Length: 353
Ligand SMILES: Nc1ncnc2c1ncn2[C@@H]1O[C@H](COP(=O)(O)OP(=O)(O)OP(=O)(O)O)[C@@H](O)[C@H]1O
Ligand SMILES: [Mg+2]
Image 1 (spheres, rainbow, N blue to C red):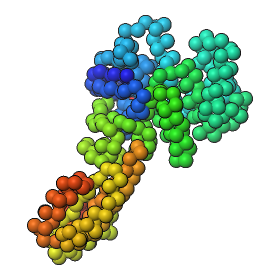
Image 2: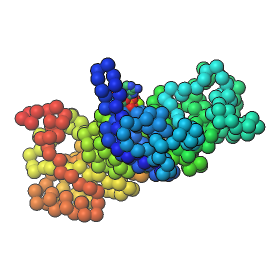
Image 3: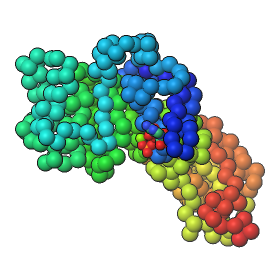
Image 4: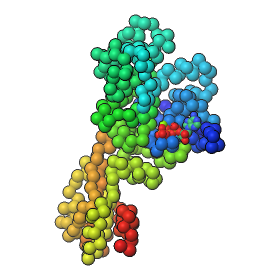
């Protein structure tokens, strides 16, 4: 288990003191894939580097498996660090050394005997599917291949924890997908705890179980990835979620709301699980005689589960709409009444328009 308690980190810059981390606390469980997302400069890398003390916090405690990292002397800290692998955005490979030597390096530094190194490098290159590239030099590899080497190197000393700092940010979407699949295999097959720092919500959606959202050196929201996607609380979290589920009513549909002469409401329905594809609109029509128009709809897979978001215009008598809303909310999706004027404002159309 990784525990960060009340971590503070300040940097002195030419503009004065910068509070990179401000009282950050976080617990990451063994065997999970944990995501840290935030905008540039939020403090993600600094926080990640506090876990293996590449960055020493000014205040607070760092516990890895109940060991107080800040109390360790140099030798003990080096030993502990060996069990914490790290993967970087720019791969950080040695261009003048072969793939084999890059992967072997951490073991050589740890004094592992040559025959063991050979066996381990072969196993690792097989695992990352680069056995045929052992004698190639990094400049001749694609970005995805370089990152596979980076991952093999990070696994060399049998780490319990893998820290990934924007490991897929330099890669195209397809290669990102394959690296994320590889990280999932690392997690499942070796039981390694993985901490992923990213600014891409699709990375969080695909592989993370829990996520922390960082802004200006603080964690502003934290929780199960599915919950954070379904019910984001903070504006910054909503902005990140919108990169995957852009739940805004398209401007060209707004006249539908303006032109409607009958009583209308706008509902936002959120469902988790396969019930997201239940025929809710036809049920509403049959049971309550309510007409609906779809203003936005998305069904997305988030960390292996289904999340559905539906925004509809519902037309009917006020009392009937209210009854229907209550009935839907009882056993169906979470239902939220949306303010039509706010919707107009959200797309830049004045309330008076
Ligand atoms: N060694 C340093 N000296 C001075 N300031 C630093 C140092 N390292 C980080 N900072 C500052 O601390 C803040 C947090 O930086 P950090 O690299 O942790 O952010 P980040 O969330 O990882 O951003 P990015 O997404 O751009 O990588 C930034 O304002 C950064 O400029
Ligand atoms: Mg960073």
